[in-house]
Length: 201
Image (cartoon, rainbow, N blue to C red; front, side, top):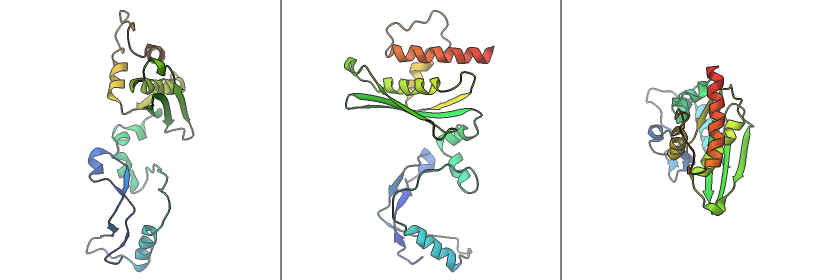
């Protein structure tokens, strides 16, 4: 490519590999392509690179590719380091939303690409919270996964994990009286109980 290169487009955030951050931002600088001094790049390869850099349009659709050069990248993301791409079961990512006093929840299944579900989370009149929609997304994913099927659930809310973990292995004396979002939490715990029983039987 020439010294100025082509106009910059989407680039990874600085130090993305340390944060497992796959988000992109638009570069305000000109793009250039650097290779090792001993590497020979044919003219047709240079032309192909320049053409690719100059393509206009929207952002490419994110596609997981676990073969070839991209495998190292994907295995270095958070889900890759957690073993999600090699997990023998369902891998589901959930998210809750609490905006303008309206709560929503949804999830996406990695194995079944078209399997998505979302819902509106009610009871806003009692006051919205960020934990309630996160719990609702978790419950949606649990309900849509077979009891005997292994499930890796991915979320980005630590308080949600603490809320669920608090009731795991608590025994018969544990009570949900006074617990926040008890309606959703109780339903999720009941499904978790059935899943544990199915494994132990």
